[in-house]
Length: 169
Image 1: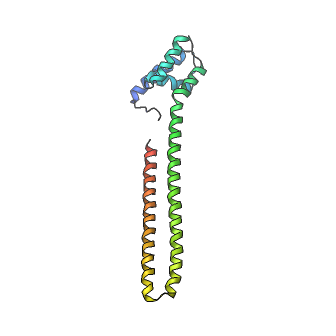
Image 2 (image 1 turned 30 degrees about the horizontal axis):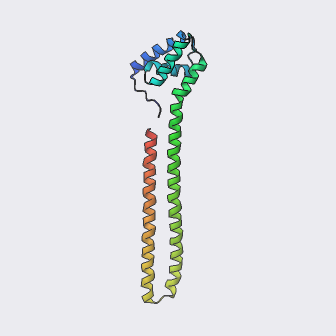
Image 3 (image 1 turned 60 degrees about the horizontal axis):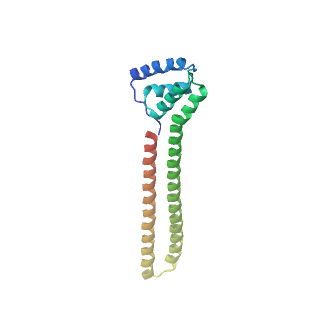
C-alpha cells in the first residue's frame, strides 16, 4: 500500500524547508516528481528510496531529472500502482462473488416459479388427500427459496462490508 504521512504541520513544514534547498543543491527543478522524491528522502520514511538516492549522490555531483523520475517510479508511484492493483483484484473478487450469488438465486427463483406453476396445475386436478402432498412440496420449495434469498442477503452484506473496508484503505 502507499506510504502514510503522519507528520504534524510543523514537521511537514520543516521537511519541506529542507527538501526544497536540496533541489537547488542538486541543480534540479522543484517540480512535483523531484519534490516528492526529496520530501520522502528528507522525511526518512522510505529507506529503500533513501539508500538509492544516497548511492546516486555518491556516484554523481549533480542529479538529473531522469534519475529522480526513475526513483519516483521505483519507490513512490510503484506503491500506489501496487495498491491500485490490489484494490482492483479485491473489487473483481467481490463482483465475481456477487454475480455468482445472483446467478444462484436467479436459478433457484426460476426453479421455484416452475414448481409453483406445476403445483398450481396439480392442485386444480388433485383430490383433497393429494393436495396435502403438493402443499408440503410447495412449503419445501418455499423454504429453499428463502434460504437462497438469505444467502444472497448475507453475500451482499459481506460485499458492502468489504467495500467499506476498501474505502478506508
